[in-house]
Length: 418
Image (cartoon, rainbow, N blue to C red):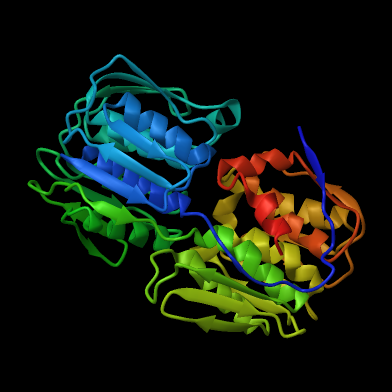
């Protein structure tokens, strides 16, 4: 396990940062390209541990790939719905997204399929997907990974909770086009992370799928809706960009991220609105977003249900605000790679910062972080978020820094360019 000592910046950053492609879009586009009949080209592809896991899954299920790593491009020859028949072993590594997308995918084929992952992922919830597939007539053994999936999914109506993870819903929706009887997904509880569900629909529609929905309560994919192969450009990862935008906001610098259109798909671009509310200056152009720190960072109370992957980013810079920072609406992130509420509070306190857990969030009071070795809990977002503290204060070490490979292997090298 690697430990990285952060070095404070000599001067505030004044630069443009090249942010890799969105993990969320990359993995969704891979599913669509797999199920399409023909060749799709995915540009702006993110190569990380999570997307490598998804690449392994689509190959195991029958896709042929041409991979251009320097060009951030993957060409996918899809199977048109004719997946490789079982027995097939699928492995999701540490990727919750891959696990929750792969299970419904496997259910479409002729099993058995065995879906497993690295030990930490075996502890994360999978029952919502397993129960949903059972209700659709698919034999599934297990409620946690490893799962054995029988296959034979033809479609139907399924009801499941929406307040655990949007990935369960997205996985089902992505596997819907091409099913004999179509698919209808209904929620029994309100959806969390709604922008991720909108993102799923947007990527599906980009690949030609027909899908109807009503206010995040239900989605319907009719029989005869199919994916079509296409060339697809993946936009930069908004969650990753949040670290660089935060760096500008709390150091008084300027950071621009190129490649962001006027109507980006990812909800996490909304993090810049939080920074603006705290005093930063935000500029949105036709193909970029730029954040400039003003030397002022105000306290704030903010509901982050729809941008929960950036809550840790805000927690890391919160001690530098002029007043308390309270985040609400994110109780469900306790079930992510780690209990992210408990983790951020524990590590802030380790640096001598007054912070407290709340039922659905946390509160952080102003203070000067002291030198500390930050534990990351096998969570890439803990490493990337708390690395920011080391841009302002000396003596900040990030334990198990290599965990950033899950979504951004070059994170520390890019951060160093600031």
